[in-house]
Image 1 (cartoon, rainbow, N blue to C red):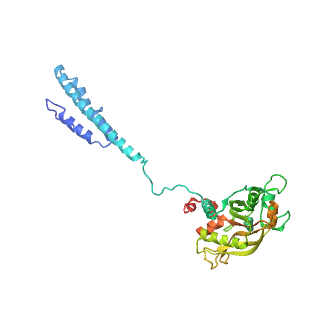
Image 2: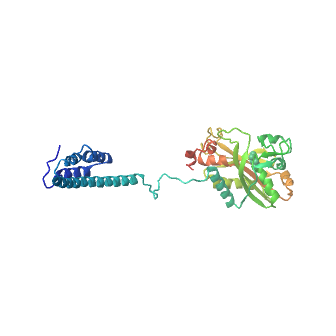
Image 3: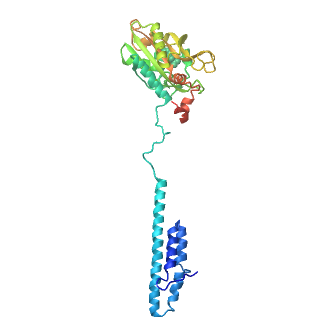
Length: 349
Ligand code: PHE
């Protein structure tokens, strides 16, 4: 449909209409369609340009100038709208892709120490508070430290209590992964002179299948006191004080006669089962008590092995499972949770 041009501004209406439509274009595609319609080969302007040729020269000049001006006005409107749309699009994109570096998401958590490490630290703290020092020793041990110096001579039947993992190093069965932290007692005694008040936490190994209450790789904390006139009552009192400090007033402890070659007398250290509070349940084998480890008075042969005079020195020792204590304190009924490394479990502590 061709416009009805006024003689002075023949394109005025068409330009006004075109500029309004261009300004209202909502996106680049619409703008391209308008560009084709208004200025393309089928447009009124291109047709008008072709028609100029048939005009007399004077009229052609006037009509030509009017046409050029009209075309320029439409082109200008197209360019302006294109720029405006590009700007809008850019700011929309910036807004959508913006990263707020000051944002703190409420669910974000920092890492923390593993539950067993936290337990080891707390146990150390309890004993340091009682005047003990902390010591450690190697995980790969010789037969002498793990057994011999602890009064297990070669072939001693009590060696069967420990499902030992031997290392292929040196003569057969001369090197092993320590089965308990007791070899560190021997190392501490060799390195110092009494009095000794020390705890020795660390990792131990036994050829064992993991189940709810056993891990083949577990942690113990060893305790050793060597002084003049130490009695079994000191051992019992120390363990009771420790139980209160670590587990709280609701948990009681008891000692049961037992046997270890390196202590005499020896005892098993039990605490009230935290799951049933002593009534008896699956976790404690219906006894109401949980076995945490062994203890006893240091055997004279152990003092002799490190060159201490058993007539002069007396002492007690204990060795508890850290993993079991951790499980008790936090009500975890399967030790394997501690090594599965499921972050949903670990995060709770
Ligand atoms: N080392 C013993 C064990 O792991 C526990 C223990 C330590 C017993 C110290 C007595 C004294 O079975």
